[in-house]
Length: 420
Image (cartoon, rainbow, N blue to C red; front, top):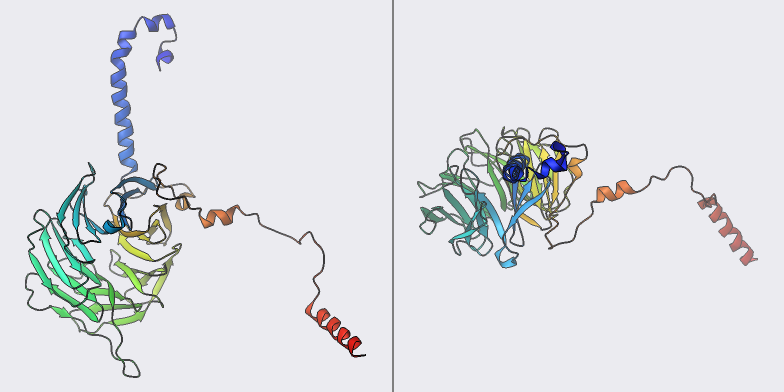
């Protein structure tokens, strides 16, 4: 830059004070350009929690892990995460030991909110205004408290003997649906908690008059239904749709597969639901017919968490295969795939704008932070198969393989000679 505008060294050396004043301005301009470019590139973010206690931020545009928080400790692994502020600068974490902590994404500081709230979280969700947190423990205790005073619960009640899933209403924050082992789904109003406002009934007995076992593992309210329609999945691979205005029994109950349902989320239009199971099968099921309309391919293990983008037709999945995947709901195409090195428990989508258009092979790209040293790199099977050469034509060795008929004739001749 110096000699481009002033090719004469004599003239340049005579104006050294001028350049000493210009240099700070150039540094400030370069910082502004790089900062604005980085904010634009990182506008769509995904947050994950894993089995080792780390919380990571994944950039969809860069397709890599850009930041992480916490320390690896199995006894403090994070089970669930939720946004704790409207501007998405804070996360509330639910740990396996029952503690609840607040993570500030700007400075990376952790603030404890409560200790030993639950033995194991089976439900962990903030209200729509993100000022209160509702939790559900495995032993059936539902607790609601403000994030500013979490030690003083606004609602606390044992709603079931066992709880395997919990979900807040989309239109009414005071409604909570729970269900678990040998405990069918129940909807409670936390403002009037004397009795559940809806108590589901099991399907009819089997052909030999045996009750169908129930173990609810995932629940979700359908959008734009005034929280009257719910869909749930069980560990016995059942998918059931309930209408609280019609009857206590499900509208229909279908078998998804032979494997337990681990997570599900309804789409924004309320016409379909994304269902994941314990072997990595992620299906898009039509709620109007109960039939599977397509499959999101590529998963290699149990999927623990499925989340929808708040406004765009994207779904993100995470599980035990250590990959975060973003799919397009319209064509079920893979848009982003990032390797994060740890087995994941929960995933969260931010509310940023649409993904930028990428290269033709950007969907198969996955990177990790090079400065992290907690795991070795894993090669992608697709890249390995793509690098192998295709064999065409006949093999070099022209030796004919004897047929089964020829081998049979030679064996018969040998037996006749031995008999003579």
